[in-house]
Each structure stands twice: as C-alpha cells, then as structure tokens.
Image 1 (cartoon, helix red, strand yellow):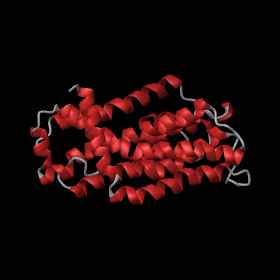
Image 2 (cartoon, helix red, strand yellow; image 1 turned 120 degrees about the vertical axis):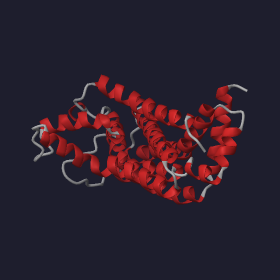
Image 3 (cartoon, helix red, strand yellow; image 1 turned 90 degrees about the vertical axis):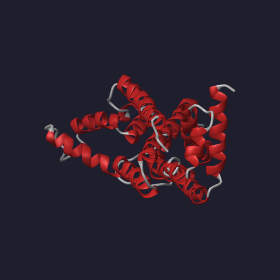
Image 4 (spheres, helix red, strand yellow; image 1 turned 135 degrees about the vertical axis):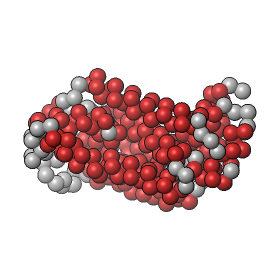
Length: 277
C-alpha cells in the first residue's frame, strides 16, 4: 500500500469519527448562521453598514464575511482538534497506533487532514451555497477567480489552525492544557493582534493614535504577514477595487502564505515523529 493511500484512508477514518461527533452537532448550526447568514446580510441591497463601508460587489461581500469565518470556523477547528493527540495519548490508544506497521509521518498526516477536513469540507459547502445567495440578493454572478480565492483561502486558513492546534495537542500533557493553548492562540490572533500591532508600531515610532492614517495602515499590513488571520484577509482584500487593495507587495504575501502552510505543519510532523506515548 502506498504512502498516499495510507494517508487518505487514515484521514477518512479520522474524518468519519469527528464529523459525527457532538461537537459538530453544535458547530454546524453556528457555521450556517455565521457564513451564509453573514453573506445574505451583506449582500442585501437594503443593508446599512456602519462607517464608510460600501458594498461594491460580490468580492466585497466575501471580504466582509471573512470576519464571521474567523469567529466561527477557526474556533471550530480548535474545538474539533484539541484532543486529537492528547486523548489517545492518555488512554493508551496512541501507543497501540504507533506500534502498528505504519510510518509515523503517514499517521500524523492522517490526524492533520482528518481534523482539517472535518471543518473545511462543511465550510466549503456553505461557501458554495453562499455564492448562490449573493446571486439571489444582488443579481450578480461572482467572478470565478474571486470565489476561488475566497474558498481556497478559507481552506488554507483552517489548515493553518489545524496545524497549530495539533502542535498544542501533541505537546499538552492533559486535555485542559491542550484546549487552553488552542483557545489562547485563537484569541491572540483574532482579538489581540491589533493591540500587539499598535504597541509595536508605537515602539518603532509609527503614529498609532490614528489607525486610519496611511503610515499605520502600511505597517499593519506588514505585521499581518505574521498572522494567519491577517494573511487571510489580505488575500481577500487583494480582490477588492484598486483603491481598497493592500499596499504590501504580492511577493511577500505569497511567501507568507507558503510559510504558514508548511512551517507549522512541518513542526507538527517533526514533533509527532519524536512523540513518546
């Protein structure tokens, strides 16, 4: 049996177990409320948004809905995967798995893709349905490239969080510390990253008293290259009208995307290969 076939079978096994769990029963309605619900609201021509936010097209609707993806889908990955390694390790199941004639790398990838797919597949389905809602509300067919970047970027974001959560689960000695580390990471990038950016900008002499000034916006975009949430929103922002596109060079955005895709996953695979049950 080839390594790829083994990874696919292990991933599907992990996926079947987790997608039928009670967590997904709770998470499913939240994803429906946050993703298609937000798209339906932003695409409504009668919706009045705060500030100077204007909906110029389907790409703007998808960009605005990214906030609700960050609040629901990423947290869902944390909740689905917090015990992926720590629970089998405590119950002795991991020792049995590691004793099987299966390469540790294949086993680790099976856990990773299983956790990722449990959330990424339902989210992708809801995003495809949301494209129909955009057409229903705005009478606009979203550009295939815009829709593709929205769906692929979201899948990448969930993969990054799955890698981070499995690192936490492999390091943690108990379930409590695993979920604490995962939720803390989610809170840091989702709620506290702007505060960190403001503090660093101030220390470096960038005026952070007005977060709408050009100098701070450029600094924030560069700081967002080190945040999975920031890269996700920069990728979507690149499809907005020219006046709203990010100023960061596309090459840096591509390098950061590649780095976040391979570095956390690589660290997790290395950690799993050295894991002692």
